[in-house]
Length: 525
Image (tube, rainbow, N blue to C red; front, side, top):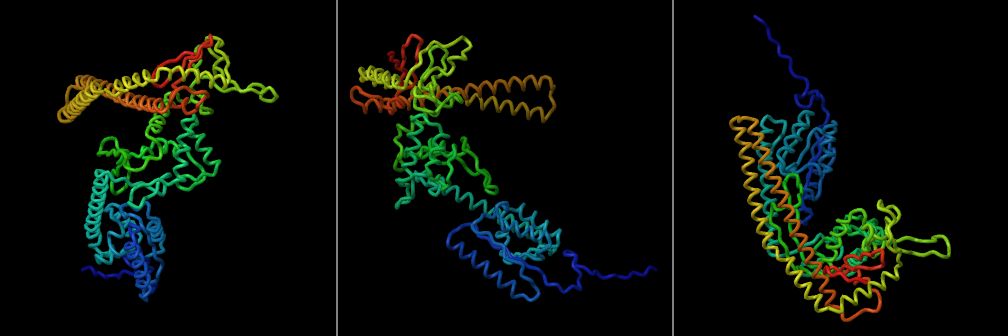
C-alpha cells in the first residue's frame, strides 16, 4: 500500500510570499468624491484622515500612501489619475493591500471594477471594501463584487437619468444657463440669469463688426491676439474656431437653442450633436442681447455667402469679394502700383485680367475713391423710390417665407423614405430567415436601395432649399430695417450701408457699374 506524505505549503497562495517571512503588509488607501460641493469635500477630507490614521495604527501594516481623487465621477476609471497611479503601483509590486470605503467609491462601472480586481488578483494584491466587508482574495469575493458593482452601476444610471430629467425640465421652462467661465460677454446675474458683462461685450461687438467689414475669422483672431485681448478661457492666442463659435451662437442675440448635444452613454460620458434624437428648445428674448438680431442675421447670411465662395474669398478689405469682372466673372482684387517709389498707388482690377483663358479682360482698372463715389450715386438712386423698395421687400419676404408646399412635400418624402427603408430592412431579414434566390435578392435589394437614395437626396435638397429661403428672408428683413432707419440721400460713402445692403457690383468693359442690392434690385450707374 502506497505511503502519502503531505509537504506543507511554504508560500502564500495569492501573494507568493514565504509564510515564514515576517515582512509587514504594505497597505495603501483610496478615497474619492464625485462633486466639488462643500458636503462632499467634507466627506473627502474625512476619508483621507480616517484611512491614514487607521493604517498607521496597525503594527503589522506599512503605510504606502493615500491615493485620492477629488470631484471626479466613478463611472469610468480613465480620468481618475490617482486611482490609475495606485493600480500601477500595485501591479509593480509596491502595494499588497488596498483599502477603500465601498465598491461604489472604487468604481460604479461593473466591467471596470471586475477587470481591475482581476488584474490585481493575478499579482496577489488584495482589495478590502470596508462597508461591504469584502476581501477580493476570498473565495466569495468576486461574486459579491459583481453584485455590488452592478448595484452601484444602476445607481449611477438612476442618478444620470434624474439629472438629465432635471435639465430638460429647466429647458422646457425656458431657463437659460451659460458656462460663464468660458463664455465671453455674459456673467451670472443676481437672479441667476445671464446679464451683460461690459468688457466682454465690447470684444463680441468688435468681432461682429470686423466680420461684417470683410475680415475673416483668422484675421479677427490674429488681431485680438496681437492686441493682447484674452480669450474666453483667459489664454493669449485666439483660434478661428472660437471666433466662428461666437459669430454663430444665437445667445448673443438674446435667444437660446437648448440641448444642441446630449450624453449618449452615462458610463463613458460621450457627447453627441443632437440631430433629432432628443427634443430641442428654442427660447426667444431669454436674456439681454449683445448683438442686434438684424445684425446677427446679416452675419449668418454673410457667412453662408463666404462658404459658397470658398477659398476665393478674401478678407483684406470691405471691397474684397464684392466687385465682379463683367468679362470673366472673377472678383476684382486690390493691387499696388509703384510700391517702392513716390508714385505708389493702390488700385483694384480683375484678379484674372492677365491669365484668363479667353484672353485679357477688358474691364477697367478702378480706384477706391471711384468705388465709394459710384456707390453713393447707386444708393441715392435706390432711395429715390424708398416706398417702392420697401414694398418689394415685403412681397419678396412673404414669397420666401411661404414654404407650405415645400414643407408638405418634405413630410411626404419623409414618410416615403421611412416606408422604403422598412421595406429594404424586411427584404434583408427575409433573406436571413430563409435563403432566397440570390440573383433575385440582389436585384430587388439594388432597386430598393436606389429608391431610398433618390428619396434621401430629394429630401436633403428640399430641406436645404427651405433653410436657404428662410436665411434669404432674414437678409431681406435686415435690408428693410436699414432702409427704414435711413432718411434721404447720403453725401459720402458709408461702410455700414455698403456691408449691409450690397450683394455685389459688376463692372463691364464699357464702364457700366451694375449694383445688385440684397433685395435683388439692380441699379446701373
